[in-house]
Amino acid sequence: MPTAKHAVCLIDDDKIYQFTARKILESTGLAKSIVSFFNGSEAIGFLKENAQNADQLPDVVFLDINMPVMNGWEFLDEFQQLRPSMKKSILIYMVSSSVDDTDIQKSRSYQEVKDYIVKPINRQRYQELMERMAG
Image (cartoon, rainbow, N blue to C red; front, side, top):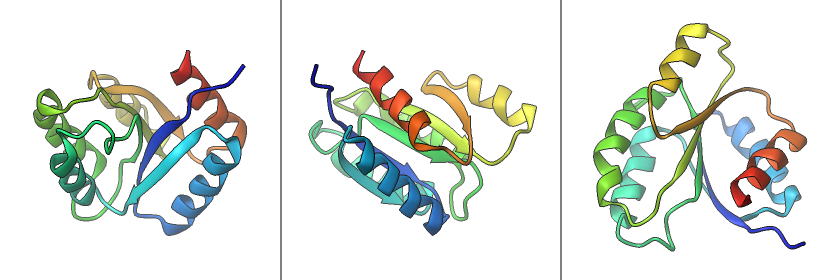
């Protein structure tokens, strides 16, 4: 049974994580495209620019919490303002090396956040998340 391919957005200031995540996601065969940003501000700029163009918007965002310029929480606050003008609904997964319960609980307060995932993320976990989207 063919599985849907998804447009993925990685927002993380860690170049090694981005490189690894991209390789793993490509290896699942479930990503049709991957855009990446090193902070929330770059990503918000991209989403604002493409808000009316569903083809350019990602299906899923893997969002880090601790980043310079604009962190994950600030991104989510901006995203909530932007969401009504967007032509597509986007799933967000918070991705962090933090196992702090405060962060996990805070992520649940955002309607847009589907889940909180602790790094590192292996291929099987990415595959599960991407396949779950198709269903």
